Image 1 (cartoon, one colour):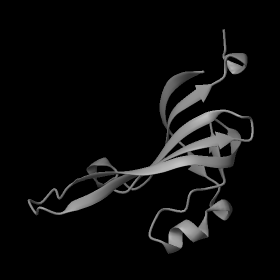
Image 2 (image 1 turned 135 degrees about the vertical axis):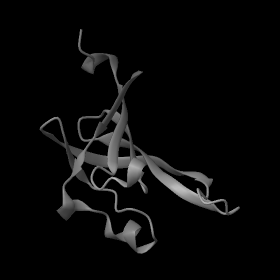
Image 3 (image 1 turned 120 degrees about the vertical axis):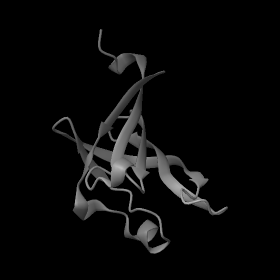
Image 4 (image 1 turned 90 degrees about the vertical axis):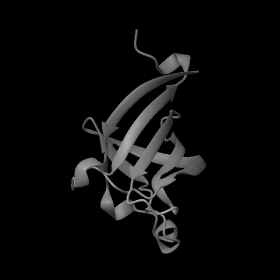
Length: 110
């Protein structure tokens, strides 16, 4: 299997957010999202982790910057997604990103 770097914003299908994750303070991982005009279904989550960083105002506290998810899609591709808690420059907009796709040799483009 190879991994292809993507780094593109995705559009979550809002009706599919995982409310159980939201109840624990995490972002609600969508069970479906749109990328390049195609709806992608999440079949399972392989693992999740958090990226932390120091306070940007000088305090010694650590804050969660990104929530990462490695997922398997309904098409059997592996993808890494992340939710950006504080988009750069205070932008409102894209918070969910497709970081990379791990594809089997059968699914790769020539």
